[in-house]
Length: 499
Ligand code: AHR
Image 1 (cartoon, rainbow, N blue to C red):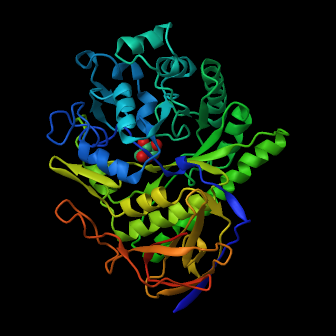
Image 2 (image 1 turned 90 degrees about the horizontal axis):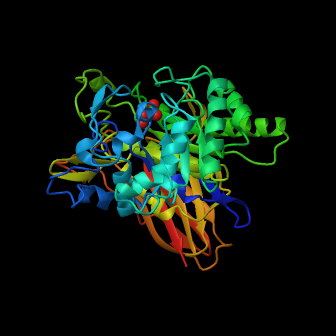
Image 3 (image 1 turned 90 degrees about the vertical axis):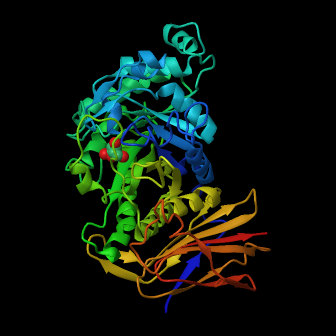
């Protein structure tokens, strides 16, 4: 059996977890909105047409913030089309996804839905086909009290109180050739700076996120970040990162090493932010918004065959298997280990579209990835301890040396609770793990939750929704303040200690 050790010290801290690190994303794409969170006339929906079964699962996840309305969709979005009387709203072609957007569900409905879900909103503005003027107008519509054209328009639509949206994305993936109105780094950097400036004139309490590269493989990665920040450093608060992983070669060991790639990606972007800060002799620090992350590849082939210009097709409907859940667990650990700089992260997405929650006309169910996401969101709030992991490693094809054990410890002082998240990536060996907890006097083991399965490709479906579900392990022992446990091969573990 392999052996590892987790070393923590209550005075060695990475930083406080910003709860927005457990955010998610709803785009007007496929069946995320229509049939996902909204289905008027369904017996499963409430009086506003919001799917109650979806809302229950979103609440189970305790999603603190949801990014909206895109994604690629936002780069052609006219927000005015999505407000006011529903029968007057225009249907329009959405060039991002080759479908028809009816606008039956829009900005105000999303604000209502978010309230019911208990989530805040991270709103994106269109910097593709539009610009600063329009961004300023939508902010006026959302956040201005009243007595101006757009705030009074909101009132006339039945929303007396402002939505008070505090977090705004300045466009989406603006370097991508697939993006409507994509730009060079200096073009985008200037527009991001000016847009953010005008928006903060309008409402100085907001924060803004500038677009980083669309992903790490973009040929301009690095120089894009540097140039964009060079233009807009003083005007913005966060820089975005997006990354999806896939087990294309059916090489699970290599696939599970992707969290190492994510870790390197975050460290690289932090270095670029700090290089621009140093160059500018700046005082302010730019933090990171990892506002799209997940596994995404299962649906790629099937999506090539989709009929164009239909409404809400089954698009990007990845069915997640057990190994995907393990990687999602490792990615959550990676994000938490960088909690000093990653303040916002959005699992992309929330319902039906590359999502932890799936729906049909007859119900909703949890995909495998639902569980690590829920555990992290529910038990991962507090302070990240600077967790040293002494672990055996392996040589992965894509990412070089990768650890067999990914782990992070969270100390929740308010509730006197210590939570250890851990993934044993080995496909063939359990792992003996120890951790000295004598500084955390009085800690008792509350539970050791495990997600594992003999079949790495096991999935949950509507017919068999509980095929992959967490169980409890009795392998964890605490003796004289020292914890000893055995983490089963290929397992996601949540060890909860409370006083
Ligand atoms: O989340 C799906 C898509 O992935 C988003 O629209 C886009 O931003 C990214 O490329």
